[in-house]
Image (cartoon, rainbow, N blue to C red; front, top):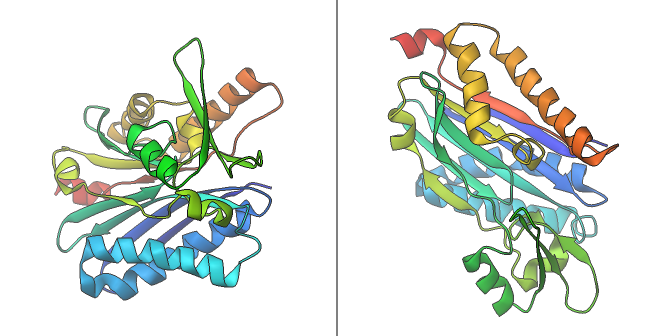
Length: 269
């Protein structure tokens, strides 16, 4: 089954929340769906503590929820998450993520990205340091083209071979340093630096085949010419899927793409 999940929530206090999750493992679709629905609830309950702390607590509560409600399922299944939060009244924009689902802010006027979240991979020096200190087994492979692939295992077991160093779920690796602690970024300045700001969110199925530059350029062309942006997103998805099939034969990763931008009337105001 498709293991990606997505949610869009408008809170009564005015916040807009957009979440994209990419599940993995036997029950990945269940974990991804649960997290995409639970995070807005937890975030809203913690907003009294400020945005950054609300995001931090929301991710931890979502992890606790998985462990208490889906205990056996989340041992060898999990999900990556990218979440954007927009407070229209305060003109504040935030991003939080774990894993390799990513968020890109671009200027739709120029088609150029101005902010890209970073994938959480075990071969990143800081991520590796945490994993090593916790006793995880990390195996890395460098290919001739310079690409590095890393996998995380319970020592001396050969499982599960997780491809990212942070995630929701994956209970078997939590004591080995695979954390649900999100990277949190206040991206308000990046958003405000754009004449026509737009945010592209996607699972790694998109970003493994389409660069942030190509994604921004593609959507920008439709946005500026007032053509159907949704059709552009569907074209971007099919382009990514075609490249997967061309490279891998009969395999195509799940591909989720979401676009968040001010309404045309607001952008022109």
